[in-house]
Image 1: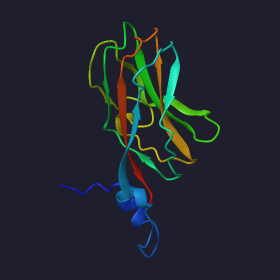
Image 2 (image 1 turned 90 degrees about the vertical axis):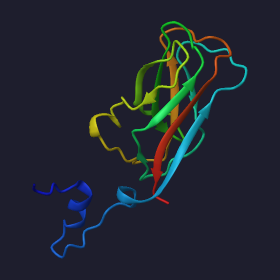
Image 3 (image 1 turned 120 degrees about the vertical axis):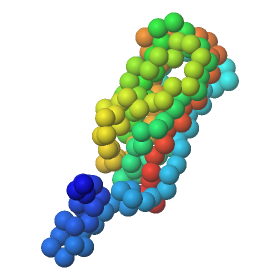
Image 4 (image 1 turned 60 degrees about the vertical axis):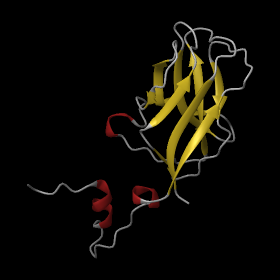
Length: 156
């Protein structure tokens, strides 16, 4: 069987001397979990956002194995998880990690259907950003708890 050349190997062999360069996050870096936990007491509204407050440096790779652990958030409530500019809070991709994930009943869904991580897509940040989430579709249950864990590889 022939060997298929990965993107990482292709980067290494890109130059005539075979001394191409990989980004550190291609095959290294530090794996981290960005955690967002709701307040113990919260009155949610449809469309509320909640941020991580953790700046992801340029060159951070988003992984495809993030999860949420949550109480019953209420009928028709869905969760979007994405990234936004850390300083301005302007969305880069509001549902790039997870899009319209059902959180109406208690659960622990995998968050990997967003355009930045689904179907083999590899996304590396190009600006300092933060992970954030949006609860939408209906008014979430007051005081319902949610914890979101997004795995990333940082270039440090």
